[in-house]
Length: 207
Image 1: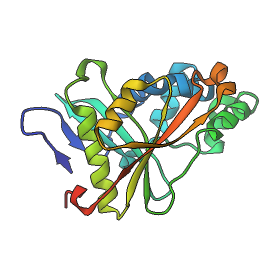
Image 2 (image 1 turned 180 degrees about the horizontal axis):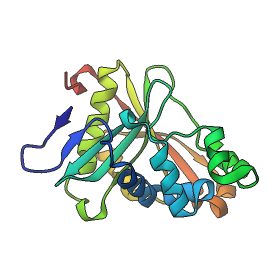
Image 3 (image 1 turned 120 degrees about the vertical axis):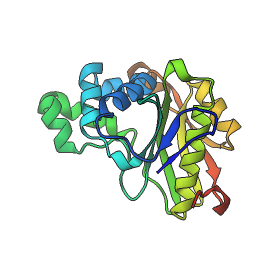
């Protein structure tokens, strides 16, 4: 399924196209490398791991000129865009280096509550920002949530990413709580995470 904006802009696809895994992984790493680095770094290894373990049907991509220029991942039905089990991490990094990485990954694990779709993240290529792609991706995520009977979308935004938080607020998300973790700043590069909600209604659906 694909949607356009009618003005020659990127097409939105509700799946990661075959062959686009490295590109999606690169966009994700550009956006979230600061957070993912301690768990999956160095960058080359982390991007390769993400690309290999993507769940294609848990991503919405913006494609322009045959290239993926934006991606939004979400968790639904027990799976998110970025996959990989314990055994996959240990196989990729070895037991000695893998176990501490699993401990870091566990810090990010908060699955959906009933009736809730959780966003894994959103990333837009630097050369295509300011064109409304992020907003279109968020609207498509809300449509997916509505079509699956969810009543809200949840996401977390870190304190060092005010640009993303501003986008979310413009698109109907409101902050519900902030968890401050200053002890994690030396490891992860941020010291607080704000959880935001956006209500979903049947009007959001595209079917």
